[in-house]
Image (cartoon, rainbow, N blue to C red; front, side, top):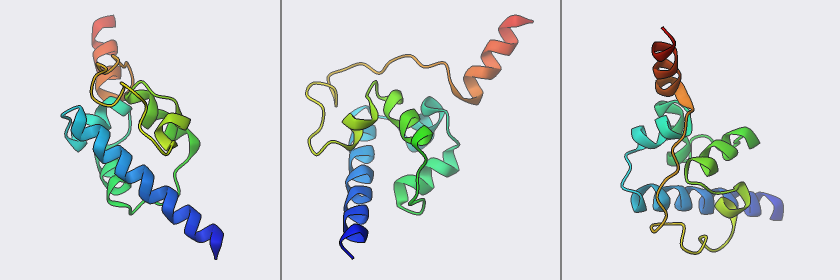
Length: 106
């Protein structure tokens, strides 16, 4: 029973952190999903808590989109100076970036 409570608490913390980071950076769910390289519908389900078991690769994409490491995304306290002050890194992942790259090669 304790393991279930810890897992639920961790998920709740992660979802709260994702919403706070997205709001601090002024991004919509759709914009953040594109930035992180995951589908909008999937990210929407993650943030709503309907996707409860996330792969490490998904957590890495979510963290990288904010210029963070996974441990910083899951840490009890927000990373100092990175929540609102840091400019988001330019990412070259996701379908939109791949489409841009393939059109540039032509």
